Image (tube, rainbow, N blue to C red):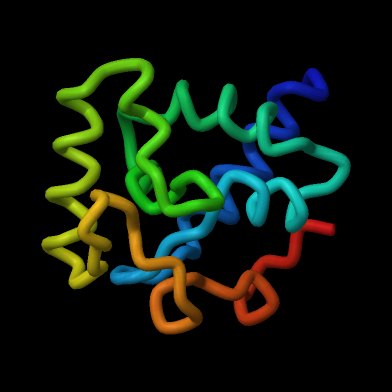
Length: 113
């Protein structure tokens, strides 16, 4: 097993625990899976679009849908999926990054440190 595979498994295990109606930023995921960086989490999440990983629950630290850089249609899908879960957006199309909508990994069953 490579370090990359191990890191991806840790990230995906964490992301699977983000509750419906909540989000986490790439940086928050990275801090919960040390020693990863937000950029590394972004690369790992880029491979998570298929399967059982709720990729749409991971956003930029400012609430932006960073996947827009890759594909604007995926950003529209992400926004739609988040809205279906009750996640509100600001007028400038960012997720409302308040405690009501940001998941706390300290409450997750699987701790990844």
